Image (cartoon, rainbow over all chains, first blue to last red; front, side):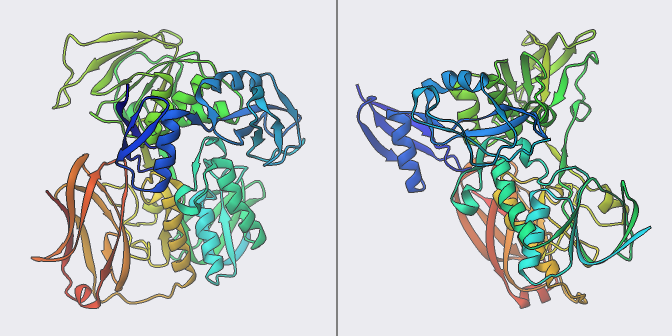
Length: 122
Length: 413
């Protein structure tokens, strides 16, 4: 069954309300997007919803106890909490450089977890 | 007493202060000094570990720390001096600034000042929530700092009052850290935060958003034990019989932000009652000649991107500052449906960037710029929302300024 569905775009602060038609396998854009990025987002949201993940990881001997991290690419929504679990068990030693890969291929997702902040050693 | 002699002093090393300093340097200012009371540079950005920063400005989505690093890198490259862990005590009428840090008292002689002090969060006492005074009540930003910077979890069963962006982002953050987020309570009929944050912070995790609701009672002897929520009517009165008690151990308050302007007020700078920030002209210069304002101490922005654009404008104008006599000015006032407009006065012609907010969400309306009975500009808007600041460029001619009239910005359906 194809359903009409309204999706709020999260790419930028405007938050366009995009109307689409989808059955989970096929995708038709109806209207509402103000830019091209909206088409891409609405399509992914209908067929393979993903989110960027940002959180933090424990740091040993650092000027701060945590380093902020992000996923190198958006993660499938249903995998978010298994990725978070793996991140929770990880500790990294200072110094950490922003951009450094902290976990490679996290939870077998082919996505890396990358530091977004530099932490100096104390 | 330690003496400094500089061209431009920037108060605050958050995103606004950094962008203003970088821009001032790019426009030829040589001797720039940034002052900040924290031990780090970047203001609130290091604790904003979520992404979405810089999309409008650079086309790239960054996290808060990454966005801060982008500016810190340029500040370092340009050898702009920063005094950290330094508190500004006073600005004098001759622009002399008195500051204090571990080295003692400093006197700063400066040609220009850029105010970039940011804002602070409203507390329980801004909303006057009745009840007990237990522990476990935090502003959302404080909880964000505890979790993201200091590795301290404020609680396990959390209710959030107010649906501003920080509150929404903290709902997701707490969920990620294993807490139960029992709901976000919003007094208005719509969320105060950006639509994208309602989707990716609440809807994604089935966190309930209680619109038209408020907290009527906080209960707890030592630690908070529960909050009572109730529905409100159109006149903002509590509808009796709708009360519901929610057991919790933590309450986060995301009630909005207040521009921090104690320094500005002390030196007699005129403050706009609505924005809570200084009244400025097209150059973002305050009522005190040579003192500019930018960032969240001028007005609370939705995104760091538009904040930085305005801050760069302030930096550029500070670099080009020359004292001028103002002969004519056009006062700008908010009309029907408009909450506020910045700048509040125009003294020089040109293409002016207006930033403004509307009073209520609305579909299909148009915004009009009117002087007397003459309409000088209009624009159709498909959808407006108080949560989305509106930015409009309008050409203002010399003749319009010379008319010494009032420019009114209003909505027409």
